[in-house]
Image (cartoon, rainbow over all chains, first blue to last red; front, side, top):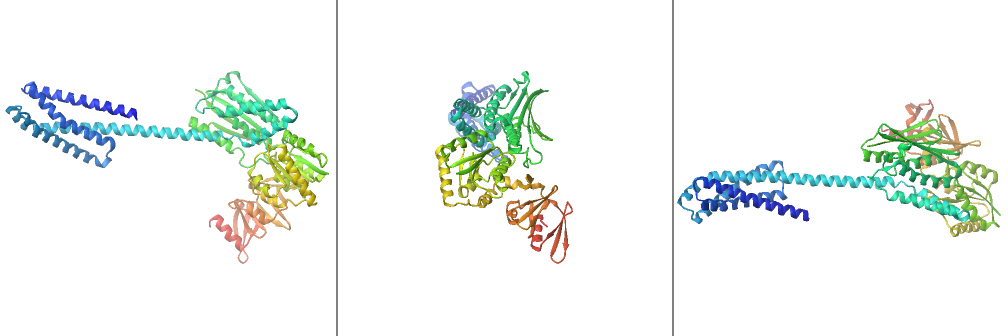
Length: 344
Length: 248
């Protein structure tokens, strides 16, 4: 609101300065016709008042109402009418100032000229206002659109991140419940891991990328908890070059992928399950591969196109506007998902 | 003395049940712990327990599917973290369901409820109604679990060519052969997705994507020819239904 007020007060000042400049110019021109400075000045000051009023009127009108494409003719008529009115006003007010016979004759002779200059000035004002306000409106629209998009994106990303399964949380609490009985120290450790993990999922800002080392640290918390839950059945292999550690990626991108891998790995087979995670830098991409075993005979239908992977695809699309950053492969009994994160 | 099994894929989850059961060491004896549904089936057949503690989400086959494969299912107390279907199904039919993590008090209540019931009704109530309810869980729409001899076979629904009534059983025909399941035709008619399966005859349900041709056959009747070459009789009512689904 205050920004708008300052904008309008600035506009008023520009208006006043413009009016005075116009009057000064007219004074100079009249003086060059041979009138005294006083006569020229009075004429100019009086005639600039209806002109300024017309300009203000047309500007004000356009501020709140922009004519559609078909009504530009209306605007033109308005300009003509306003020019007529201001010329008439000058015609009937100036004689009262008794500026002399010569001036009176000049006034009548110059009425047509005065009309056209007024018309041009008002028309010019109308044009400037029109362009200015249309642009202003457009800017606002764009801003609103951008804001709406941002909001929608935030909400969507938030939703995609909310894939943390209640299953995981409740089952972890159940494991803690078991540990409390006979391994209280381990129970305590698991509570801390779980808290750190949950805190890590909450505070992340989606727009800010994080280094891979940080993401892996978070992932390790998750894996440690899952290992307590599933005992010897779950093994993990993480390999990551040293220079990969500084590679940047959107926060919490890997966790749902690994969660998916664990879910399918552990629930599709009955033996020991090894989840492997490998990170490499290739060209200008950070490439992360996650593999899990699965049983091609009994794999649930739609495996690999489940919400987990679709969610990741959507998220990468929202962040990078690209659809080719996620690839999945099925061979023999290993399911591989590969994601590429562009590095800048 | 009641004999029980604990079936859960998470060792610590089994540990909680074991620990809580120590209070009932005079009434309840734990026979075995099982880490998945297959072990569960084997142990149930071997021991014929009175009661099982059963998790729903387990490797390969879930708790419902395991129960389906057991001929005389024992009484069940479900222990599950979060499963809206389980809750829906077992609010009415199971002895009890325990939401993980559960307290000792809650657990004791479940056991006392079971012991009280067992005192009144010596033969355990059949778990049929419970299974009917469990059939609404989404896994049931995606695959069918059958037993062939001692082996468990998981048939993804999209592998099914057709189903045929076979006395008290239903034969499920797939490219790998046919499998028997002790369910009724109307059970499958209700659970299979009507967009992909149609009951074209009193004794046949056919996968629509498998049909290559429909030929007229005798008066009012038709024959559906499947990709595999199988010829499935289509009744008058079945033909009307098929035309509806196929939009012809």
